[in-house]
Length: 341
Image 1 (spheres, rainbow, N blue to C red):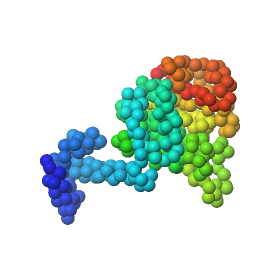
Image 2 (cartoon, rainbow, N blue to C red):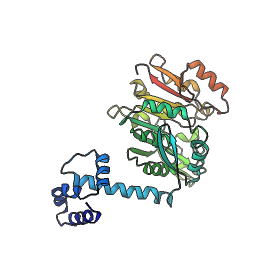
Image 3 (cartoon, one colour):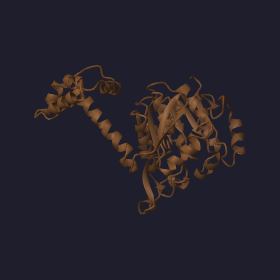
Image 4 (cartoon, rainbow, N blue to C red):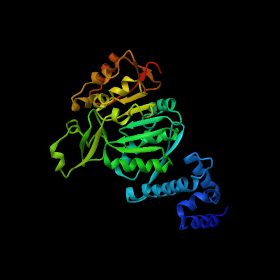
């Protein structure tokens, strides 16, 4: 059916005086008047076969998606972002490279020879199935969040830095990933508020271990953003879906995040993929042993996944690797897998 007829039917239905009732009555007529491509999109987005809700909820959601897409691509970055296309595993992604920090990250990491963390990408590709829950703690520009979304996973992208939240949203919109949900928060071992310096948009430059606790000065500072602080146990309760993979990249706060995930770990809730920043743990008053001790060896095995092929690694080998990596040149990524999986 032509676009003109489609617009005419929509105008007739939406302008009716008894709009709610009229929408329900004419739902199928409205749906049938849509162009074929739009029908396919609506069906894919909502997984709808047929029903009286088509005219009310599906159409409203479609309009909302169009509006959100326009907002994410423009207003949040002040202008349409310049984008780049690259491949992650077998997936084709587009990422915004407009903001300086996102552009630097993508150019120096994603598009570097071999790509950004190809071992972790390959590992996630073997672990994530459609409709799995992927939790990305320290999502940065949304690189792994978008990749997981392209695999069909539902994504919870948690990012501390307010300046990066719109970048994640833009990248999700650019790839038509409506299952990527973004939360601006700090994940730690307590709840409350923390502050983020407005100094630099690069990872690891806006927060320090001393700032992860309540600080009275943060209420009067004009150089900091206030960000909610929460625990993983509070974020992912037992009543919610079980995560398939929880990725943690928090620049030295790994042990603090894991202390706030004690209940998740105790019930073997998914795989924890942790980038170990051994040289930064002391900033938070922690040691490598604190990260390892969060996962009892009788219930969890460790696999190093930033190498090809991934390989099991012992506690002793992790400690030796961390001691040799005093400058943070390696930052190994460890997958803690429940023994039963």
